[in-house]
Every structure is written in C-alpha cells, then in structure tokens.
Length: 515
Ligand code: MSP
Image 1: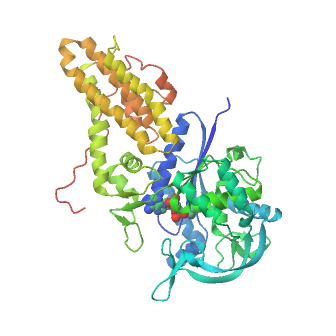
Image 2: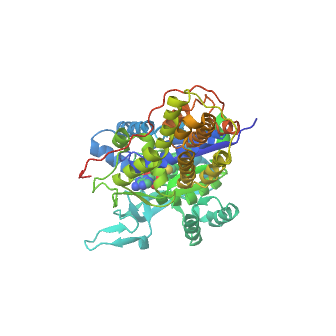
Image 3: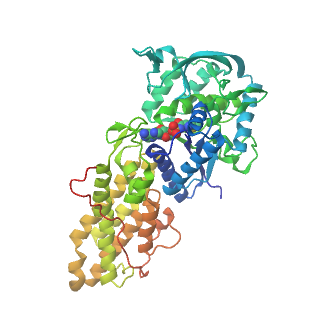
C-alpha cells in the first residue's frame, strides 16, 4: 500500500540565544501534527534543527570567548535537550554546520547560478545585524540620538556597502503571484496571505545573497571571500534533510514538504524568498506555510533586557510536561498572539485536567476497580443515554481531524473536552454508585459506556499529551495498537484492568505566593 506522506518542519532555531517557550511552542505544535499523522497511518517525516551561521552567532561566540563551532555545538545540544524534555518526536535534527548541509547549500547556489539567477554587484543599504535583514530607508527611523533603527522590531541598523552577489528576486514577482493564486492554501492564516500578496504586488527587488564582512557561514562556491546569506543557507535545510542534492536519495520522495510551521515574523522568508529560490532551482514548492502568533509573558514581550525568557524545562519539572503542552495549544488559537502566565497555566491544569479529564477517569476507573471486578464490564443492553454518549465518542475522531487539519488545535481540544463534559453529565445522571445494589447489570452498561468513551478520548489525545494518554489507555487495558482504526471496533468486554492512579495532580499554589 502506498502511504500518504507528510513532511513537516519547524524553523531551525538560531543558536545565538538559549531555547525558550517560543521555540518549545513551534516544536510542540509540529509534534502534535506529526503524531496525529502517524496515528492516521501516514508516512511522516518530522524535521527540526538549529540555524548556526551568521554574524549574530559569530558575535555571540566571541562574547562567550570560544570558537564559533564549539559555541554552536554547545547551544545546538541545548536545543536538542529541550526537544527531548518536550517529548518532540522528530525524525531528524538538522544542523546547518553539518557537512551534509554545506553540500546541499553549495549545490543550490550552483544551481541558481547555472540557471542565471545570481549575479555579482555591490550592496548598499540599512542592515540590522540582529535581524540578519536589510531594510528600505522607509522601514527605518532616525532616533533623537542620531542612531537609526528598524521600525519593525527596533533593531539597530547600519549603512553597509560591500561587494555582494544578488539573487534575481525581481524576476519572480509574477510567478509568485500566479503561484499564490493557483494555490490558495499555500499561506495561512488568510490575513498573512493577504499581507504577503500585497507585499509582493508592491514590487520585489533583487536580494543580496552573500556577505564579505564576516566569515562564519557557508563559502560561496568559486568565490570563497563571500559567505552565503544566512537565510538562503537556512532555508535550504528543508531540502538537505531529505537528501538534496541527491534527488534519488531514499528520503527525497518527501519533497515537497507538506507544511512549514513558522512564527509570524518569518513568514516573508518562507512565503516569498523560499518559493522563489525553489522555482529558480527548478524544484517544487512546499504545499503550505502556516504562521503562528507570539507569546508574551505575564503581559510583557520576552526580551534580553527584561530577562524574562521562559526556559520550559524547570516548568515541565514542576508542573508536568503534558500539562504544559496542553496549555500552549488550548489557551490560544493557533495563529493568534497570546499571553503566558503562571496563573492561567495553573488554572487550566486544575480546571481542565485535574477536575476535568483526570476526575472523570479516576471516578470511572477506581469505581470499576472496587465494584466491578477490575475488568471492562459487560455491555449488556444499552439504553438511549448510553447510545447517545457512544455516538458522540464515535464522532470525535472526525471532529478532531477536521480541526487539526485547519491547525485549530484549540478547537480540537475543545471538541475533546465537550465529550468529557457530556460524560460528566452522564455519570451524574446515571449514578452507577446507586445502581450497585439495585441493578448491577445496568451499572455495568453504564461503566462500559464510560470506558468506551474514555478510550475514544485517550486515542485522540495521544498527539497532544503522549504520556498521559498512554497511561489512560493502559488503565483501560488497550493493547499495543492504539491507532484511530481501533475505535472502529467495540471495546472488548472482560479485559482485566490494572489498578488506576491519578492522571493529573491538582496544583495547590501557596496562599499569597508572590508569583
Ligand atoms: N533561524 C530562523 C529560522 C530559520 S528557518 C529556515 C529563526 N530562528 S528563531 O530561533 O529566532 O525563531 C524560531 C521560531 O521561534 C520562530 O518560528 C519564532 O516565531 C519562534 N518564536 C520565537 N519567539 C517567540 C515567541 N515569543 N512566541 C512564539 N514563538 C516565538 O527565526
């Protein structure tokens, strides 16, 4: 059988700073999509990694007093550690300083050159080292102290004149517009698409794609005084990982990528430069680029000067990994900006996880352990109320699928939680505890219905909360096959169940804690 392939990527993270909540967010969202697609039985390839070249990294290494390669080794390892802690199920981790990537980046360069899209010239313009980007004069502003900054983001810019190779981006304006037109789903959400389209319509200028003022980069083939522009270098990572330039490599069938997940500030690079580079190289463009929003922390932008970067690792240690994963994807519609606060996180853990799912599972499973022989109870003759709840459970995968395919993670979770509330209402109305003496056969039907409902919930929750969902499915006696397909067969009666324990401890914050 030919499986549908799904190639998903995160941006590769800059190593000039430490991993934080923003990176964990992009990676977790990508992880949910990768895991969901595996659950669907698709052939998934999930890539993340680190972006290790450029002037900023060179400067950060100098500040740390170590050679750039040692510096990037250290920070890249830290990003890999964060991925491990967040339970990110990536199939590959790409580093732009790896030989395979240098090979791919130089191969693309030669291809662009052969195809006539690269020419030598000199660059003059306002350059922001922090953003690794050139700005038009009207995108900058002069401050009262005489310095100049980029309006978007406030990075300091300097006037740079240096020899540079150019990429003929201007030649792609019409082709890009035609591509967006023919592929309406290429850029999402819609608002971002509109922004990109009007930017391209306003005219594209050729892009400087090499630098001579620093050396921490991939040398331009044939002119080694130049290093490749960091964005050209970085974007190519998505091809390197599938074997480029060897188009007969086993993994190359994953190209074009199904989805590049990116933060909103880098949509321009992925939705304009990247397809233009690919068109110029004669390669197919990715199917979709989705731009998500930014987190502020307790109402403030995360920044070096405020020192409020959140390292997720201590948070995971203290409050739990699946709790954090759930919060990030439930709290804010993907695509919007949101605010991260401890209060909101603890609030969701207690309300949705401890009191919601955790309580439903515990009430059901500990009751079965004590009063129903510690096995999946016999179904018996089902009543209308049972069938109604089971029908909701049967519809759940399709509802979750529809939301996930739109990257509406919060809606997928809302759907799951609607079923949890329905099950709560059901257990209260059916009151199995009072049936125990009066009608044990009916009690068993109720408990069976609850187990089947919890199984539907557990299966679709796996991509979001892998460890907790696994625990829930263990408590329900579900075997090794935990794919969506198992929900099509009824839950087997009489399966022995292990002793359950709580899934999500309640978080009790100290009174008046200054947090
Ligand atoms: N190296 C480039 C990407 C190259 S991809 C070919 C880069 N790296 S980054 O480390 O600065 O950012 C990577 C991702 O982290 C982006 O998707 C960005 O949106 C995300 N986040 C960084 N800070 C963030 C928040 N405060 N909130 C949410 N995500 C944010 O850009």
